[in-house]
Length: 447
Image (cartoon, rainbow, N blue to C red; front, top):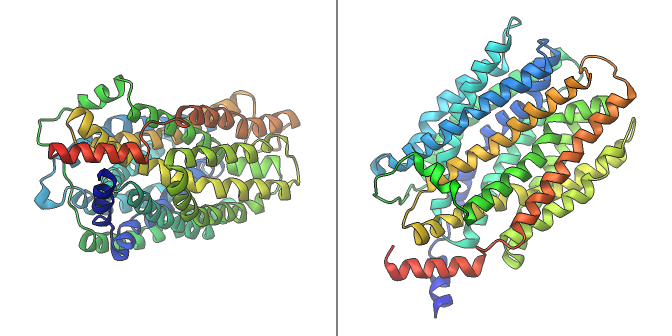
């Protein structure tokens, strides 16, 4: 009888195709901007503007650490925004012009731009992005409470995000510094136009029916939530570790193809192929999660990434074909990384309601966003100074030993972080059966 009730509830929570498209499209302009920020901006500011690798790493890390404060604040305020305004959509709409302005400043710097400029511009885009991404992710989790529909909603967001990434990558020319400058300007225009189209469409089409508790909240809840062992803390830590495993090679990608493979011209095609494979794989992993469960499917995909990526430290000059195999293989695995963890986090909103008598999607996805952004900040903040410490210079031809160290740093730490994430998630306690039990218990309580 319990399963029948659960199936009936799920059948009433299937979002329409129009809602999926309108909601997912919000990720398109953001993805184009943030792939440029993560992959192009650090190298551009080093090679074209002459900032040191250590300075860039420290600045990007400091800017991301600021999100430790802004993400919980935005999540808290989003949860407390009057429902009549649209708790989530109000923030998404208000953040759009701020994101546009921040992208324009950061991606089109004057020739005199230095460390202070990079710090302020990066802080601007991170804060504006937080104002959009945290409420947007919570919004997606609230469209449906269904275990499998959440994977579908997350998958739609990811597919549009990957589409934005692919279009941005088509605009990238890494042949020289002037070409990189033009690439960043083109991505700026892509972001501005995308925001102008997708934001009003989502605001009109996507319902905002967020339900949060009416108890008085405190920002200290973020600390309290992380201080106790729980499925949420376990998932968040695994997500952070796996995120580091993805962020390190993303940060070092341009340096790897330029100095290890000695084929800078393949950077664009390789990145494009990687994200095409990612987009193709998202619906496959969403379908597989219905059979294997979200957490187990995610672990299998991460294991596959490790197998492919273990070859990367041993490649050298001209090894384009073996590297292409790695790119395709890891791209096919990354679709699970992008779609499933966020859907699992959505399921924990009901766990929180049952265990703690609270509904705090804004807080949950604020901490989620912090972990995601912290992973990339740590990657830049750790890897760039490490390379400079050993004598690696992005502007010259380096010694063979320094190039080999770059290859090892590109893949070695990532494998360790991913293996740790697998160990944490393989026997994750909140699967489909447990989620159905939680929802049934909540219905019995009338929550």
